[in-house]
Length: 503
Image (tube, rainbow, N blue to C red; front, side, top):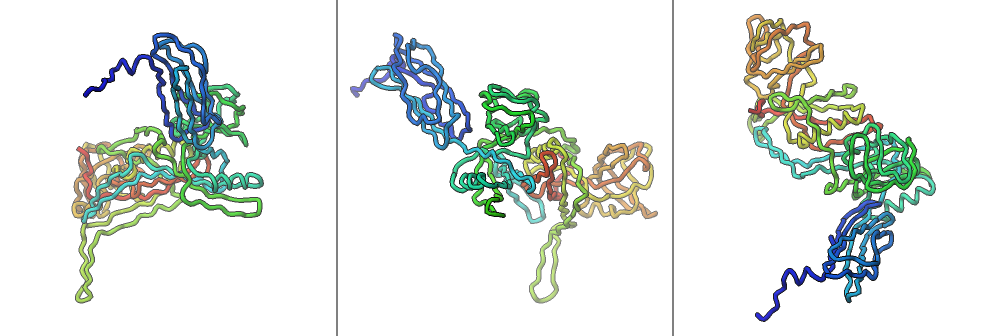
């Protein structure tokens, strides 16, 4: 009662507006720029007497600091953080001589740049983990749930430092905390053209998916390096948000850089009094990390993707047969073993070698589409399923094969639910198995869901079992020999109770 109501007009007219008045930028990179606007709603033009700044060390304000500003006319301002370090608490007060100042404030934390080159004599590693929870039933069926929307990405590097770099690196790593800007050195690419000071774009050769998706890049040329921010990407050209400040030759490399934190523990060893080797792990900040969008161009069978990557047989392929049993040994009487499900679960351990970054990225895309370790896919086993004993001419559902034990197909879920027929011309024929019986002459006849015609034995290279499977774990650790060649070893688990077809 007896209070004066505030109206829109009492707030809007005869006032000065800053849009936005406060920017909480979080963690920022060197060279970051922010924009805001100033305007007023007085009926007459106002004179800006001046701008007073606090916390302005390393912060550059661009725009009018005095002069006449007309009504309802927007004046653009910019704030550049090219020289700022550590915590930033910046404020600019605009004085119009009305007895009060109008304040713009910027709060940010400048990340520490880690431009030091890594030691490739120790293979760098990149680990991508999705954090999947596995819920397993008594009979071996399972359900998997991802607990994280975006995967956790970590990097493991070796740094070798000498002389004056030795104590500089030790002081940076041991005495300075907070976030860092860490280059992903294995995912580097080359400049296609030299860069001059003042250039606002980069021409790259063999741009990989991580470089194209990154908002921040490191240009490195020997001891010279610079952090740049990306505005847009078109073809092999990256447009930057600000001009390049240094001169880089065509031999310079461009590396995607991300905000990261060092792991809780890292270590170093001193080989001599002036030579140290540091092993450092970095955890990328998943709240700001942008992964490349996966490209789904994988062949599908029964509505599931078929695993297309060739196994590196220079490393052994191992198969573990895991039985699902309950054992009762009451110390008296005979021991009793109860089979929870017939047959064994196969767990394949395979190594894959990629000879280009595009091949490795394709594997990463497959893992992304599988949501780490949740998705089901078809994969050929390392061995052979059986041998076909006669040619097929007319369309038929049946194959006559040499004796291979498939007559027990209906008694165990451990049999591969499908087969992949590899022809010498490089193509695959996939067939879903329905049943199998033995013949009086010692051969067996298998029945497939699909018909087959015009298949000659001389055209067949081999017949492989086609298993339904999942990745056993959701951690994908890539080990890099060079920026092109990399390897990964994965355990892949056979699924026993999954429907071989998605209807």
